Length: 206
Image (cartoon, rainbow, N blue to C red; front, side, top):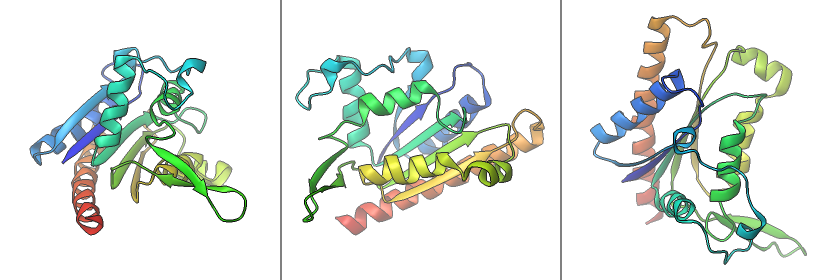
């Protein structure tokens, strides 16, 4: 199986990087192929130009590679900090440009004069790992956890990924080394679950 890892944190050596590296090492240990994208290190351009909007648009080679990989992946891992209850703009732009209509999803008539989305991604499991400095219970109390809604329902729900797990590590700013080591162990366990889920879902849909 092949997994795509998408990391969006501007600071090299951040805990987000440690999370993503742990996910990569775990996948490789399990014999999975890994497509790795550190968006800031790659200097990915998040701005969607008008010329890319048409379905038959000619895409730049680097963007075409992102698209080919995400549509071929059996599983997806996304790692990012919580910025204003949303992903960093870099990652939002990645979704705008890479999760394209006609490749990640499309719309079909709903029989009621409208349309409904049909997901096209091959991936059967996704793991989203976010970090924050606001306690998660406070985030949920105040805002209802917008990130969970975004990834579970809006993005991967629309694109047809049936099994979505999210891990939240917070508050990072006051965490101890022991806490962070425990969180990384949680990452390893979640990745193992994701690989098993992706395999089970793939067999079920075969």
